[in-house]
Amino acid sequence: MLSKKLLSAVALTTTFACSVAQAEIKVGVVTSSTGPIALVGIPQKNSVPLLPTTIAGEKVTYINLDDSSDPSTAVKAFKKLINDEQVDAIIGPSGTASAMGVIQFAAGSGTPMLAPTGSAAVVLPMTEQKKWVFKTTQNDDLIASALVEQMQKDGIKTLGMIGTADPYGENWAKVMAGLTEKAGIKITASESFQRQDTSITGQALKVFMANPDAVLVAAPGSSSVLPQTTLKEQGYQGRMYQTHGAALDPFLKLGGKAVEGTVLAASLMLVLDEVADSKSKEIATQYVNDYKALYGHAPATFGANVYDAGLLLQNAIPVALKSAKPGTKEFRAALRDALENTSELAATQGVYNMTPADHSGFDERGRVMITVKDGQWKLLK
Image (tube, rainbow, N blue to C red; front, side):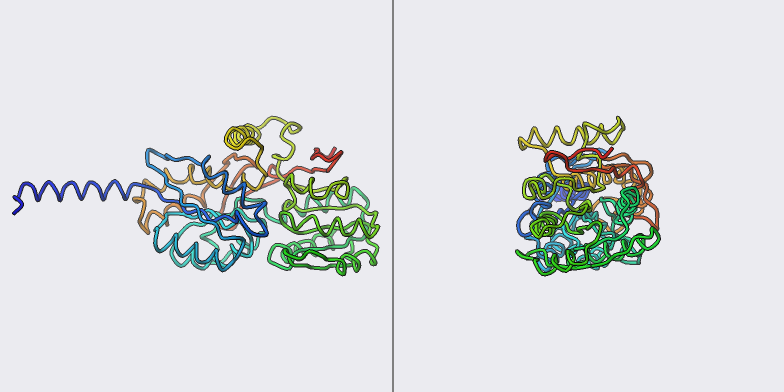
């Protein structure tokens, strides 16, 4: 039979162990490292080892799951992280459709979600559920307004659009409709396609026959290439614009000569050597160098979306720790509040200023105009 002293010692040890376990901060990560949007998800998954493992003296553990670019799998991964792992925050998923499908679970459990996705639909319009979501990429309207301004400079009067038949493409169609109308640019054709489509000849032909001065492709990752190459094969000679969804080197390799002269607005990471010195450039350069040291090649800009999520957490967690311990509902709520009060936080792609109405937080410092010249990304001058 155990003595009272031994029992007390065991109880004390157990209590201490529990307090240590509670002090550990657990962050779930859901990326699409396989499937149709793997070009987006792989650099995001690869960026997880570069995230801070200690914040404010507390250990941070990352639990990384692959959703195979499938919204239903993303839901299962989210539920596992929330119910089984009881994480304090979740970074992901990679795809907009998957992100839209898991917001309800983040909100229902009171778990802050940092979405490295393209579409502003995950945070706009703001709702009770979306107040738990923080977006680590530029909102569509910030990128779109830069594109429309450039179109005006280029003398564009008519525009064709081809976008993915999902929240990413749909939100871009909505945003562009309003901005082009104000700018006096008429959209003469608007077509959609599925990301997994291997042929979109019919949609491209309809846009080609409308004979617009320019065409905007609104598609993320590798799906941004097919509309442009198809139009070029059909003989289209007008100006081509892309969203920040195309901001990755495989776009250049897959598109080849067909994407030469393309114009897009995206983060400074694509043209680090050409932009002026800034805190963001310094952070982005460090990220790129660390990524190269680990994998032997530079990351796609999509990886920076996860890296920035780590910076946001690194900034917010010390504030949340003042209110509650990790592993509790109170800590997650305090973390949400701290993220919402992020102010002038420089990161790889710009500067974050979050507010209750704006959970992306980027301003004009989060975009530059870029073109494709001689098969390389170049600052548009």
